[in-house]
Image 1 (tube, each protein chain N blue to C red):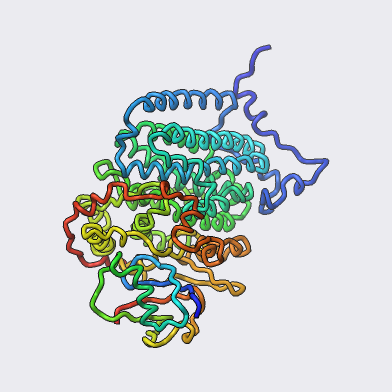
Image 2 (image 1 turned 60 degrees about the vertical axis):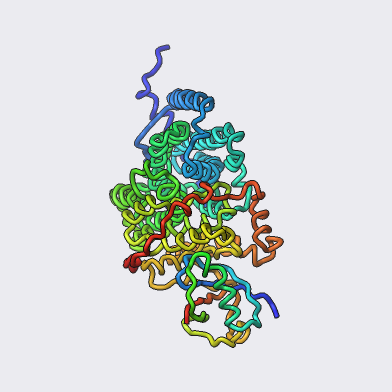
Length: 508
Length: 81
């Protein structure tokens, strides 16, 4: 029998929707797992993905990608490329693997939920490929670092991290459980595939891929470029879902889902990508600052994209643009000062030439953030390194789980007060780093109120003893795993005292 | 006499820190307890007395946490007088 051309059978096999006769719509799609927002089933059946693929094509393409990628990996594994990586770049890569690898696997759980509970067959089809993609990403981003364990044992955190209570991982799990592991399929299509994957992951994956290639880390660069090609395909689940919600008169629901997750994603990206771009990437290989990258990819390209779908910039857009000037500088300072609490060796990234770059990209940096590094550098030079290490804990936000750095924003002239926001619910005080973080919490307090931050656990007696060593052990960090200065403090000895200029005058 | 958790902000510092002074300590000691985590580590020391500000009000040097009605995890700012 002659084979049919792809165009003759594809739509039939991809789009097998039917009206249920033995069970109800609600039994097949419980709201908890697939919130249809009241959109009729036949409207969901109009779901149409821009980029279509058959399973045979998928297998062929993915096999080709893996063959190419593993070829690079095999060759690089026999070279000295890894051993000669810049310490800052090594920090960025080690942080990336720990923060991302097992989260990819969890995203596979999310895609699998859409593969079953997506409201249209075409969507379930795409999500099946998405589940395979994310499984691939989890496998790749554990296998690649696994091979370098003999050179950097803490790459073990590519697998270990998500099984610990390290503070950054608590923040990541809090975000990703909300976004996909514990989210319904429809909300997930908006919040994971549209908001996060289309908006933000390009920042981390394409931006870092470009930097990796410049630096000579072709292993990592090839890896995350390959990963992002899959992302571009399964991220397309967001657009048709969004269109159906908007057509059904639910633009407000789509907007609300978007607004909540966009802010949450911003916080984690400020931590992970902000540090990598502005401090860890070697100066000679930086093509842009984190703020410039955000301006291009978020303020320009992504805004255009979501406006095309009828969405508007979230209510907190001015606050986001405000934080882009200072919050990741504060997070970097915090990660460095509390470096024993991370699984990589943070580099300070504040040598004389780097500070010139920082001042150029963030006018006023030396007068605001530079002065903290001045004090720490002085302590290093005068033989008091112990004063650059913590004796207590930062308070963390009960929403994003990150250190509350409102004092930094205030000191740099971007906030009107250094004070955090607080809320009391049923006698318990919740602390927030920003108005949008508090807003996220208040949208569904029943979802978040029972969670304990790492500080709540310390105060509640969960962390024993309630000391720095006790907390490090609780976070799964042995003394050998705790982060140390990645360049043995050469930044402090290279620095001539910088005359502090006036603080930036960028009040909110 | 009990350890009392507060959120401390040292004037000029970048982050809110967890500090657990004794609830019977005078504010001079509370100020030192909070300042220890910022002054001389990230913020240059000044030769001026330190004061504690709570909800916008400067507290008397002899006041205690127990006496101010401060609740656990309230925010205390340490500023130069």
